[in-house]
Image 1 (cartoon, rainbow, N blue to C red):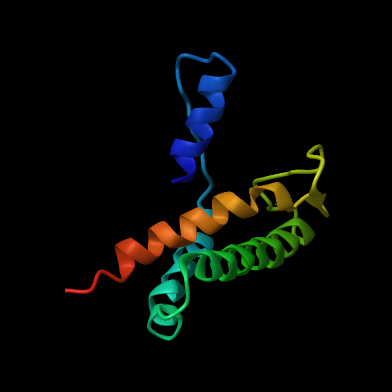
Image 2: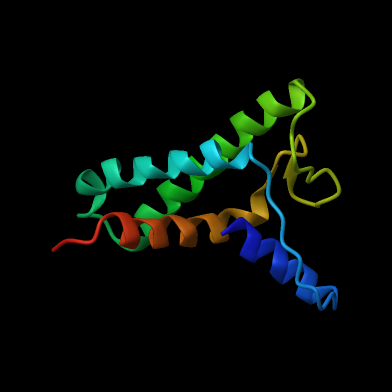
Length: 114
C-alpha cells in the first residue's frame, strides 16, 4: 500500500519512473492493522463512518507511537515536519481521512463474512 502511495507522489511530481519506496521498519507497523480483524465483530453494528473514524484514530496513534520510538533511535524512515498539520513530524492530521478509508478497506479484506 505504501509503495503505491509513494508511487502516486512520484506521478504527481511528473516522475515517470513512478518509484515507490518503503522501509523494513514499516512491515511490523502495518502488520498491526491485523487488529482490525479482531475488533470488527464488536464494531460491525456501527456505521462505517464511526468504524472508519475509530480505525483512523487507531492507525494515527500507532503511527505516532512507533514514529516517536523510531525517531528517538534515529531510525524513523518518514518525516512530516514540513507538512502543515504535522504532530512532532511523525503524523499528519490531514491524512486522517486516508487512514479511515484504509481501515475500512482492511476491514473488507480481513473480515469477509462467508
